[in-house]
Length: 68
Image (cartoon, rainbow, N blue to C red):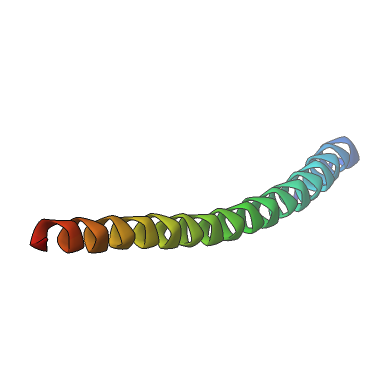
């Protein structure tokens, strides 16, 4: 049976700790991106509401003045 090399185990342990830190950072980045996407989604709907209201007013007044 082969013996366990403590140097290789130490290297693997260090790589594992580095990966855990990277995954933690990625998790934080994904949460930030999700928050930004939710904010932009609200801005999109607000913009659509404003454009819809403006086009409704323009349509109403153009119809009103075209009748007279």
